[in-house]
Image 1 (cartoon, rainbow, N blue to C red):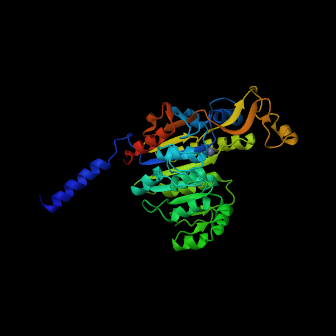
Image 2: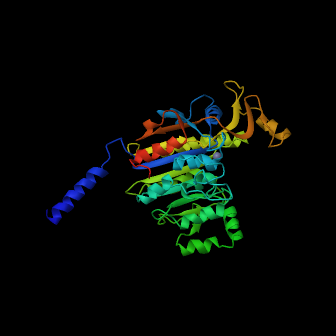
Length: 374
Ligand SMILES: [Zn+2]
């Protein structure tokens, strides 16, 4: 066969392989992670935000399942083990960031587990993580880093500069500026020098990111404007011809129920906005939580604010006490029951029934049409 014919045949084969069946494969995946946003919190957020059940946008999605969040050793998970399961498909122990269950927390590394973000990087996709809490805290760090203890935020952040796959995570926008800089200094290192060495400057605000910067790192003190952070990432990722993986975390812990429920209502609004700006024929959206939380709807009436009595309660109680108002009882613990997982877009149909949180990794990987390494 002539060379030109071989080239043509190869090009055709590649084109056929690359062309996804419409609606079957995802080019892009976005995971929306409501940290501590379990079923009771999702339910209460609708009552709080809309005065009616099931009014959140994510509650209108067609594909719904219940995800078990137990760890390799405990019924109740933290964000580290919870997110590790979702992005690597393996359960590990609390406190461990994307390393397997042979890890001894804080003492001994186990085997590093390849994350979905790393699979995407390996295949040349663009990747991003956004969080309203520290971007080196457990949930975002589990996407791009590996450590035997979630407390090693400075070490985890530095791993951005030394990726094992592709050119590493492209967009990292979130909080934790002071902590990550301080912790890096305690290790005797200079974060800005390291960033300069790798030609990846660290911006202090979303507004400071130049329009021409396609792979921005931003460490913020103020993360009040999560939509601005998310769109700074999404607008850039959408330019990727090969597709992208994006994880957006918005904390929904309800130690302060007003703060937590407002966060979740606003997260849901952001998700609605993002869903309107992506092509749902080639983009899978998944909403889930890493674990549930000790919030219970024990009363309340139609026509009354869900948080009725909370202002008064705050004046006479300590923040660490169990919140008891007519409609809610809120403790301060993560809880072990299943969390909601809901999805739309190509591959969303595999989110159904009861499953372990590790199944979500298979859903995400499978949506792209990829297989896990042996
Ligand atoms: Zn969490």
